Length: 232
Image (cartoon, rainbow, N blue to C red; front, side):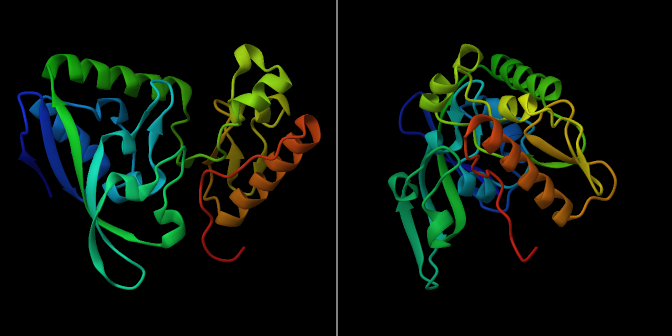
């Protein structure tokens, strides 16, 4: 469930969404209502709770979900229900405090702005088309590794000092490499796609290859963006 919570002034709008709401459903709701803020995330998979947990982002436009959070209701690892402010999450690049505390998000309040519905949909569709052109369409878990730090990009002298982990993986000649039913995307090297009933262990093996080859060629230690659960 998601609903308009209230309006502080003529521009600010507060939206409360339950953790289990599909993130894309929330985005489409805000677009239809003419609320600006989440339009660049159109097409991103997962739930609202998942988007908060990882601080979902669209780096092309330098926007993060955490930018629009006001507060949230959580369950702590001790079973206590608490209302917390945005600062509690300590939002960062692919980082939040709750990754370490194991808190569970129940609902979130976002602060958005009133906007022009037509313009917002145009921005949303532009971002969606950008993803379609630059990211694979086969099933995947999204970007495998975090981008490198700017200082490392400068030290390596990457083109335009790009921080793209995908660029480094591509330079290692790994696009198209397969393991079982998994493959390093030939469109974007920082994606591992499921092209033929891939298993988690297939993905894990390719991740190890990607880390190893980048370490050998660039002396950079890639940091996983996706989270591995269970034993491999």
